[in-house]
Image (cartoon, rainbow over all chains, first blue to last red; front, side, top):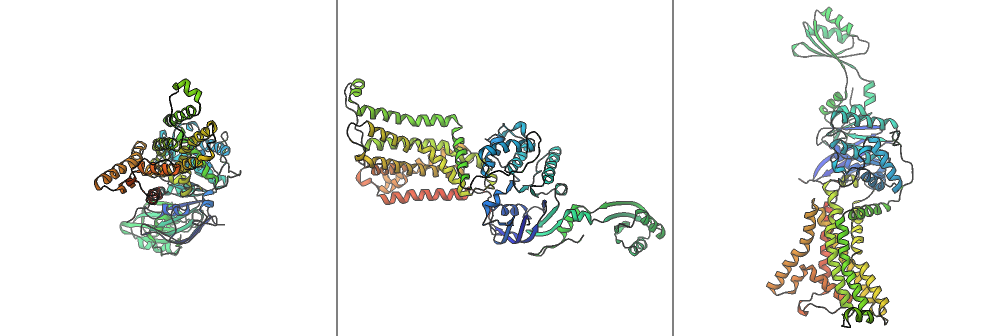
Length: 315
Length: 290
């Protein structure tokens, strides 16, 4: 069963179409939700939580319809919103316990799990302090703790590293990696930071202007990655490129002797130097890199997704 | 998860039924209400008239005590009018209590934007509001109909002649009147508190919502020489309601008395507006139009 299934999902808010015919199935253990501002990431999350009604199509979480079976879906979801969201007058442990009880845990179990969740995210020492006295990083962590306390099947995180300093961000990423590794929870992480998604997710859904720009398996993409080589050269670049094309490389020449190559795995750096030597061309700089999530994202942004259709990226 | 091992552990234990989540909201709301010393002080203060009434009932029914304490002088009669006064006093004290407690139940959560997290759990907006309403209603019940009915029961017990069976209308009237008032004040308090982030301001607005229209209604009545201005005057309206429910003689001049139907329509209108305000405000996400 897919974690999230979208079938022509459309959402209109304030007379404006925010999500336009999203179709796709998300199976990943950790799903990244990417897109520029206003792409519809938060709206999609809010629709999955049943906060916004669908104006067309359907969305399902674990096979449950987001409109008809909201309560059952929320039972299985832990949600960490993007903005500050807590009850500042409560202590950390009381707040997490309250949320766990609302999720259906008996009072005693909720208290036990609240303590455990707070220790797990690293707030054990400050759990009896009022939340209003917490730092920004602690407030992010208390949101994570309340989302985890009731043992959800799907953890939805909206910009989890927002406002965190580098070390706190790293701790958050490590926590998410540990949760993913534990295996009982699926993650849906919305973020602007490609690096966060790259480090935590195995599947990525890229939204653009309310439509799906790309849905791809990061692990598969990594496996099928090809070598990209950027050259700065002096001399007869056309001859050099022709020679490499014969060998099966993709080659693009730009002004000022800049060349971009996509080379098959069998071609080594030595072969490129040999081809340059035969063509009488000097290589002044060579930069080799692998395809990154950024490349996937940028290609998705350049592509023009058609309404209601899923664009599969060609690597 | 484990405190000592710091590892995540999935939860596989029992879950409470969905309807029980409502009781969680009620329980935490009541705990929040009682967490302030001012709440305890107000509650104690609201019980003082009940103690005075209790002493009054004792003296009225005990000639020996009356002779010792009051040297035989006469005391008021324990009848519908007496209970109407007690009920009115308790209801106005309930307004004071509600003006303090209602903002505590809602303002913290609104100010800290807790609704997205609260409503992402398996509880509906209706369930959330109902939970808060029930908590406030329960609190106000402790100030209104519960002590009033206890006084009624005490009067029935201490009266030398059969009294209870002949005066059941008083008990029913007190119960109905107090429920009406507690419901109205609870809705009004929650609705107004949900629109204000600062508790003190919310308290002021709750009082203003009752007394400013009353003043305007008084002006309308005086200038236009019509009784309909009293429809904006909640104190006058509720006094008439209490007196009619308990079967006590009405103190208002006959030409200024309001018929039952307009009063009922007005109270329903106020409740409707409150529900509308709560419906607009209690949302996980606000949608900006345009």
